[in-house]
Image 1: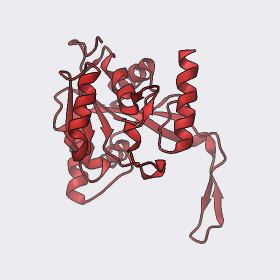
Image 2: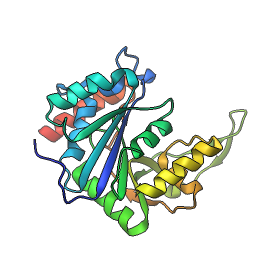
Image 3: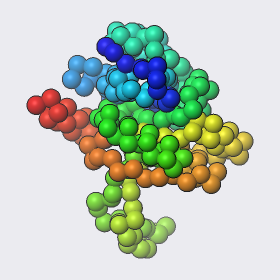
Image 4: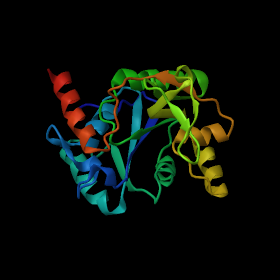
Length: 234
């Protein structure tokens, strides 16, 4: 397997430290099999083959580091991918990953989003280099209601301005690290890395992705993932 071109300037943090309780399985979602491979291996391979990527850090649970290293070796990526233990929260795991990278630019990606494409990664990277940071996202298709504390509709939001955020998310590495350090100092935990950048006043560019760049978190997602995988192979 060929990958990790020396000419690239971007590192990737692939986050696979969650336990995934919504999947309803004993095994964590990132290690479930999709077409004969663990889900996170499919994810790693997309970045490993990308010409802009020179470093990859896989952040996983401390108890899973050894078996992840074994899997990475089995699929021929052991020399190029660092596997490190993460923290209690996803945010802490990303911060650990940042400390193991030296590239000017960094992507953060969910280990359970195996269907991101080379083209989407390229577009996200290019947008970040033009605008400073960028995230993949898709326009919201459903009507979204805002509720009050009693469960009544408080407002109907204009979906033309609403986007569902995906990964990868791309940043200058030093800026994202500063955003994480400030969040740690202030005890702030955000829902994604873009939120930490926003708190620093860093503008974040939305880049339209694809609806099949799904995050596999439930049994239904896994069924849909099998469908997407079969459709792409067919």
